[in-house]
Amino acid sequence: MASDLSAQKLDAGLKRIDEIEQELAAELTTAEEEVSAARDALAQATAKLSQVRENHQAITERRSSITEFRTLPRYLRRDQSQTEELLRPIAGYELESADDSPPPPKAPSPSPAPVSKKRKAKRDPAPAAAAAAPASKRSKRAPEYLPACPTIVKTDEGTWVELRCSVCNGNTEPQKGQFYKGPAGLQKHLQTNHQQKVTRADVIVRCMHRAVSDGEVEKIESGEVEVERVVGVGQGKATSGRKGKAAGGGGKSRVAVPEEEEEAEGMEAEAEVEGGAVAEREEEEEEEEFVRPSDSVPDTEEKRLRLELFRQLQAPSFTPRD
Image (tube, rainbow, N blue to C red; front, side, top):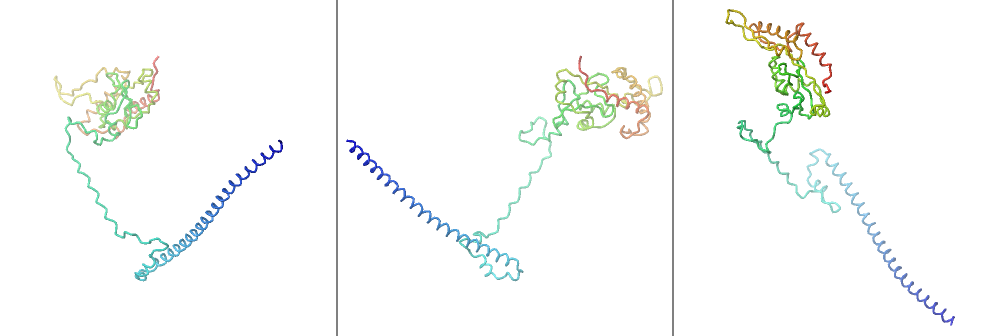
C-alpha cells in the first residue's frame, strides 16, 4: 500500500515537471524572439547613426563651402550656376526657401484722431471710458483733508502731511481761531496776508510742514490728540484804504487793524509790528510796485518775528488731551 502511494506522488511530480518544461520552453522562445528583435533594432539604429553622421558631415562641408564663396568679391560671385550648385538639396534637405518673394510692405499706422479743443458744457457728464486727468493733478486741486484738522491733507502719493504757512508758519485764522480750510484756506491766507500769488497745487508743495503717520491720523480723528494751533501773523495785510481826504479835511485816511486780530492767541506784539509795516507799505505803494517778500531784505522787526516763529517750530506739534 505504501509503495503504491509513493508511486502516485512520483507520477504527480513528473507531471508537474512536464508542465514546467513547457512553460520554460515558451519563455525561452519569447526571449529568443526579443533578442532577435533587439538585434534588428540595434542594426537599424547603427545604420541610422551612420547615415546621420554622414549627413552631418555633408552639411558641415556645405556650410564651409557657402561661407568661403560668400566672402569672395562680388565680381567673382556672378556665376549663377555655382550658386545653384551650393544651394542644391543635400541629404534630403532643401536649402532654398519655397517662397522667395519679398515680404509685403508694412501697412501705414493710422493717424491719431484730432483732439477737439471745444470745452464741454458743465451739465454734460464725462463718459466713463474717457481718459481722466492724472491723479497727481486732481489731488492737488481737490485734496482730501481731515475734518478735525483741515490743514492735514492727503497727497497724491496717498500719504498724510501737515500744511503750515511757508512764511509765518501759521495754521490757524487769527480772527476765528479755526484751522485754515485746507489748501484753499492757506492759499487765501498767502494771497491776502503775504501778497503771494500761488495756486492750490503750489500750496501743497511749498507749505508741506511734516509727514503725519496713519496712527496719528486715527488719534486726531478720535479726539485723543489735538493738533497745535499756530496763529498766522502775516507780513502786513493791506487793511487800510488808499490815500485820500477824510470827511474832516485833507489828510491820510486809514482803517485801524481789527481788535480781534490784535487780541487773538496772544499775538498783540506781532499785530503792532504788522500795523507799522502796513503804514510804511502804503506810503511806498504809489512810488513803486509791490516787491515779493521772498525778494526783499527783511528789516530788524521782521527778523525778530521770524526768529520767534522758528522757535515755535521747535515745540511739539501735538498736545494730548487730559
